[in-house]
Length: 402
Image (tube, rainbow, N blue to C red; front, side, top):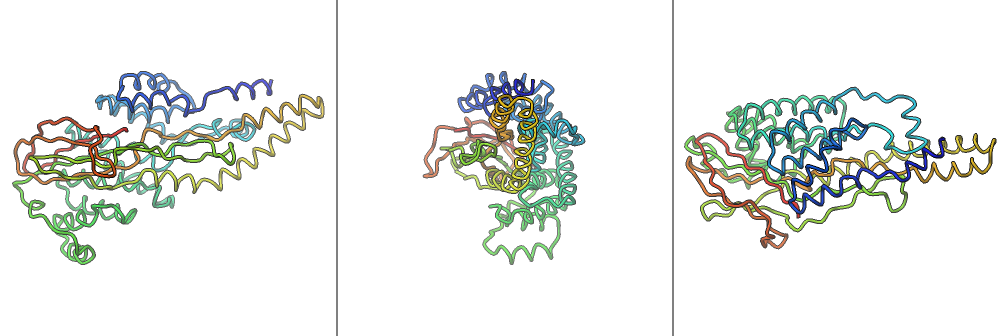
């Protein structure tokens, strides 16, 4: 019976295989097909449900169904925060067979990303109060994970940066400054962080901090529009490309490796009143994913070594009764032992922003994707009219997929 079960697992499709069709449909902008393929996987209760919910929520966002995307994300958030319980038999099964036997819990940076996606959807729908709820949730998770001594790359600087944007949009300038400062501590390389700290410190009337940041970032040129109450701001949150994908390691199929997914579109340009504004990177998902996998390698090695020992014991027990059956079981168990390739695979490669202060009024805005040479790739967001209100921010969220 054990042999038959092991052999049946060999033929089971991996997570990556099951979602590949949906990801291909997203690249082709066939959003309806992607949503249709992911929906039954996400709705089925299983050890993999969380990861399918996350991919399904992104597909819904790209299809324009932001309300349903948030319903799915809220479900995923609840599931991710459930007590991490694994039975002894299930853990033993993961040693005897493979890591896919245990429930998928998500990496720390993925769990914080759930609330960032909720906030992005709310901001695009113009629901600032709901986005504020997610900003507070991000802060709660940040405090929890920092107390758990999580590494900086696990704390997801974009989510903290986004919460700062939300606080700033609500004119809670002191909260915004604190969040920008915390994002800086997680990742000082955020492209816009110097001007964000200077601006938010002044708006929060933290003049000592303002002067300190002015000295630290002497190249920051303050725009008078930052402080002019007659101005609002256009904020584009641009999700670029695809994060790295998990594959079986070429050196050892029991371990996962990450491979980059090439993207032609590398930047976004917003055209407003014949003026072009380029996107600037605020978060690199690929770097966080790679660092997380490297951090997990020690645990993975220890568990797989334990797994090999477990397989040897089980096979030897059968071999004592039937040598052929024992040898076949050893082969089957090792063939069935494969790396866990589950991940939130619909995340972008990087997240970038475009921020344009504008006087109150109506504007025509167009977004174009650019390649590494600065040439248009054909991806973009068709021209649309947006209304900028004094003292308020207008958010546009866009994703390039090729």
